Image (cartoon, rainbow, N blue to C red):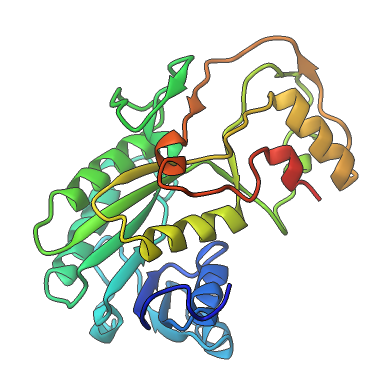
Length: 277
């Protein structure tokens, strides 16, 4: 990508510079964006600064930390990239975190928000699933994300677009080890819903570049091989023991990314097997 990707220089804040947020920040800076990045970990502040990102210490517990710098929210666009924590009360806790975040956004110059959500917002319906499906999710984290999505979409002071990513793969994530140590056999016929880090970054950029605001998009590789097909190949490529599979299908969903593709987004990896290294 060259520096003409966006029509003009933008100031973008990324709330959560972790596995996805950090390479996203580097990508945006290469494309003439000024990037502010947050981390909840004091030790990571220097790492962000070394990468040229203006660093901020921000976390929500569930209120925002008292010593946060409000300048972080002095941006045109905010990308929100922190998933629900693993805790029993996540359906109550995560919305409280976002209530505190929205309070700050309503005091800020941010007018556009991209929220990184997950396909866990969908129940296992044993069929193709689109953005129109609103059945109650199976997981508490998915229920929490549903609540948070509605909170963001209902705001009047800024527009939110939501990207529901599938399982994240790429680079240091080695899916071949996922089932390799399991003693019990796994249902091998269940389809997978995965997406590579490069496509995640390109999709976020695609929304910004094309002003696709106020929308919800699923984002998974358009092809959905079975668990057996994908994880056997992943184990082979990664040098791990091949998992044990049985020819059964657990409750599943096949995530449709047709709405995203209809905006002329072209996946780098249409099949997650092609992304394995």
